[in-house]
Length: 104
Ligand code: SF4
Image 1 (tube, helix red, strand yellow):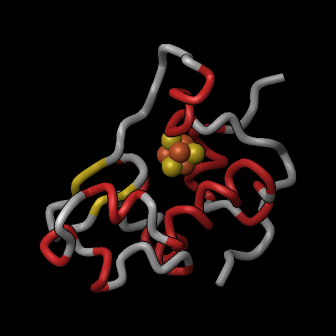
Image 2: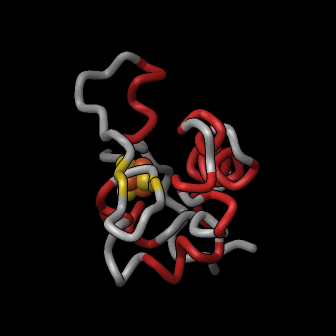
Image 3: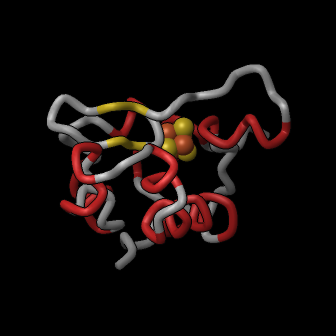
């Protein structure tokens, strides 16, 4: 499920900067309750409702339930999340628009 449209402005996702070999890369975050998230900005109670719409805190994605982080990073949930950031930013979490909106 996706969040409602909030902003049509494209994003420059800092969590995907490694693709373009940019220096300012935002790494994944390990949350205190046991999940990985694409970055620490999403580990915020204000962002959790949007994250839950992407099912990124499903039990199957809890770190303790996976043999490797790669399994989590290649999950359908994470792939859909990154696809939304790149190709349908209007459905991205509000926090992503706040932190990674493309500058003109
Ligand atoms: S706020 Fe969103 S777009 Fe920006 S680095 Fe974090 S997950 Fe990526």
